[in-house]
Image 1 (cartoon, helix red, strand yellow):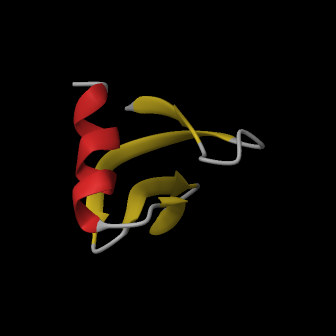
Image 2 (tube, helix red, strand yellow):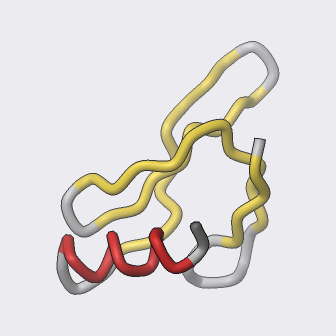
Length: 57
């Protein structure tokens, strides 16, 4: 599990997995017994989303 701040800095979420889907970064969030993909940020391009994600690897 990994704690990640959303792009708007309004939420801190504990995610199991992070992925880039087009221009969006999404995280797999566990909510009790249900896991769901949650929007973490949206960028101007797929390349920028990958750049932001890879910045923290």
